[in-house]
Image (cartoon, rainbow, N blue to C red; front, side, top):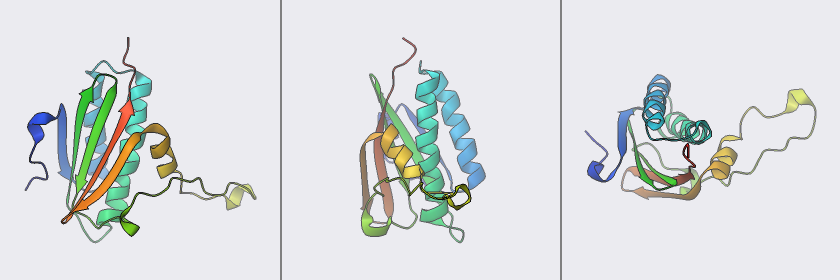
Length: 151
């Protein structure tokens, strides 16, 4: 089974089973391939943060502990913009929309600070053109990241 019908239009396509280990392996493969695209370490770091958050959310929330499936990531480079498209067949996002990315409250004692809630804040600050839609049984997330390259 494949999630992609239009792989020929992408510069890079990865498809892998959902799971923490599989996400780590896919990110490592993607980072290795990005290093060959004349991107700076900062650019690659931004991609790793955003995709790491997106993919881990898919594993944890869309598929959950009782469900596994495929995740597909494609990348198309257009000059100084990396355009990503991520597909999965897990559960849809609550309220059919992307989280707003607000930081959780950070006041109060150190031991009372939240452990989570920072991911979508980072995604929204490092990526742009975020778009989510549910098509049939498939979640589709698109976003872009600016890159400078090595110059």
